[in-house]
Amino acid sequence: MKNIVIIIILFQSFHSINAQQIFSETQEYTYTKEFMNKGKERPSYVVNLIHSENKNADKIATLTITDIELFEDIFLTTLENPGLEGISKVIKMEVEYLGCCAHVAAYYYMVKEDNSIATLPEISNIYCENSDADYQYIFPNQEYGVKGNILETQTFYQTQTTSTAIKYVNLKQSFTWNNGNIEESKLTAITAGY
Image (spheres, rainbow, N blue to C red):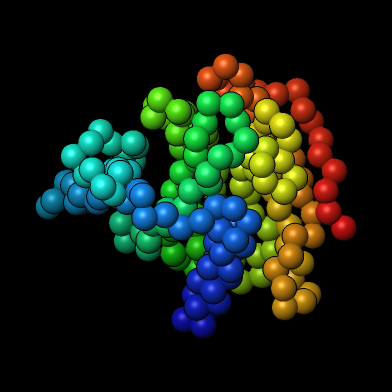
């Protein structure tokens, strides 16, 4: 039980680091959760990401949670003006599962100026008791961002002190935003940290 509490606190600290750096909690979006396959051996949830003000509007995204025994919570944050032409904001939906460690699946939805959606590949993180890193996307207007690029990074945090400052950032993959299309980039390195 002690380990689970530590994992939750660790996950929350990583979650608030991201939120403090530009992604922030949102009231503009919410989600609905429908219990499916009632009476079946493996029931699931269908989760719909929607606008808070107009719940009858089109769904922004839909996903299925099949492991409902380990499902814990969903966190929604947004990044306003990410620095990509034609993109007004990015919605990040993090789905948390708890076992011996916390597993968090992060889904990123880029809202275009015409309100259509561009989706980035899912990113998964596992937070255990001594975790000091996570994977995330970095956008051009964020620290370590690169103009016209979306960077999939692994960020390492200083854990020797009481702060959770960034120690260094590794580039895992880069995408360019090109006339409304997400394409793999030739960018192979960024220098950050220490």
